[in-house]
Length: 177
Image 1 (cartoon, rainbow, N blue to C red):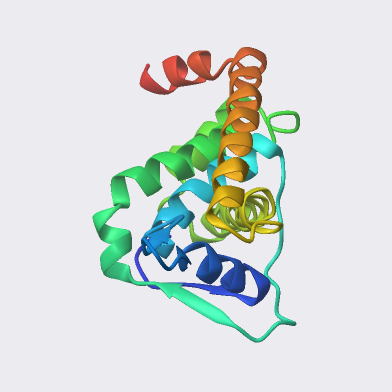
Image 2 (cartoon, rainbow, N blue to C red; image 1 turned 135 degrees about the vertical axis):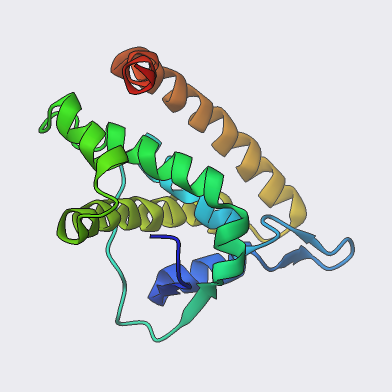
């Protein structure tokens, strides 16, 4: 999945551009340094918040993440991808089916496409959440800081509940066996 440029379209591209732009001209401060940083974090946010989204083709904007950046971050992207595949559809699929999606579909193009689409939907959902929680109502640096603080606390609570409720440690143990 991470072997060619990734193009983010529509409102999600607009959101990424705004989150990677300077938010304070006095300090040149940004929320995210690069689009790849958002792309790394977004699927986890989408999963934790249970939000997916689809490509927005109505708003004519796009932004890209180049192959070189993807390759430099391949380990973390692969880890996130596998984690999403292990956790997605846990109420519909057995652990063996989810393990197949996470680890065994690399050479099966049709099955891999389904998994890639699931991952992409969580990325887009995560981008929406990051934008809504951090950017949407902020005007000054203090607003951004307050929003980040609130988001981190909410994220932490959701993350801890997910770990308790879903047995992530057990999934990791099974994956290492």
